[in-house]
Length: 229
Image 1 (cartoon, rainbow, N blue to C red):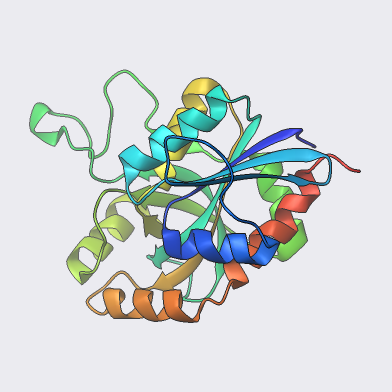
Image 2: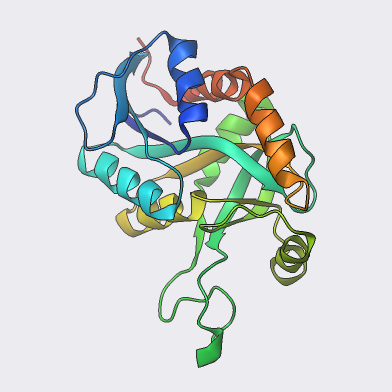
């Protein structure tokens, strides 16, 4: 499975800059976003955008890259631990859902969107390729919302209500756009914290000490889906 045009959405500038450094790149792609770059990997043209944190930013960047002809959208970043994973692990979530979408006062289930899909799937073939390449664990549901999760009560709710494995602030938005447009999507995540009371401190420490390991692992995996020279 090889793609000639690949899109990458990276939310956080602290994740984007190590990505540039790993590939010895500088911003050179004229987009509405402040930080963007395009480059060749194999024979594939790759377009990467630092979207900014949060669902709206991530969705906008995803749609932008799709309208520019990208045939698949990829993402990498840090996630909070919920169940079955541990800080430091690399994971590949199989599905994504917005945990902060709530119409329960109208009689709907938590996170349910009336009349439409609201649990979005990563591309199963891409998951297998990345898993074989870097050994990242294949996990179940990633829940996503515009809130940094740092309390045990909310963490336990996600585990008990959804059997979720991880939490973040962008993946479901990207997966939603890709589902709508019929574009393959995959996200490689690294667990940074336990999403409980000391999550903020643990997240900052992981960000400081990451040293480009996540970006390097992602790029190594990405080469497997690039058109060969």
